[in-house]
Length: 148
Figure 1 (cartoon, one colour):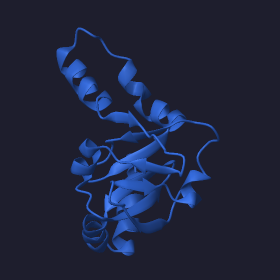
Figure 2 (tube, one colour; figure 1 turned 45 degrees about the vertical axis):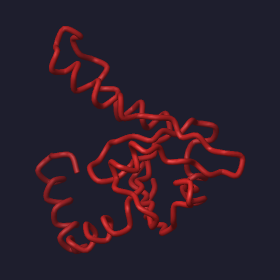
Figure 3 (tube, rainbow, N blue to C red; figure 1 turned 180 degrees about the vertical axis):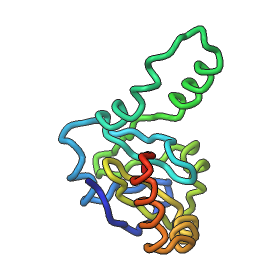
């Protein structure tokens, strides 16, 4: 399970290095994917996590146009992470725009995947919620049976 935070920067070619503490935690040899999964950031998931989290989208009637549109939107926002021989990955323009990435970024461990945030956006979101309030929200949902 991932946690923690790493502050770093995009280089002049919009490349980043996935922090070692996360890279070593991903299953060996699994392909990684950029996924537009949560609002305001880019998720990076290994193939097994991507497949498990998106599996419910595979079981629907292709005649259901509304569901087809939703699935198309979701699946079109997944791209493989390609690393150069120095371990850097260029973040595609679409994903930089989705997350509003500038130079300073934050990579956050989030259960079984990681998120990449623009530092200012992350700081704003993080400072708006105390740890006490986060615990209260999380545990009240767990008690009521909702997903946390």
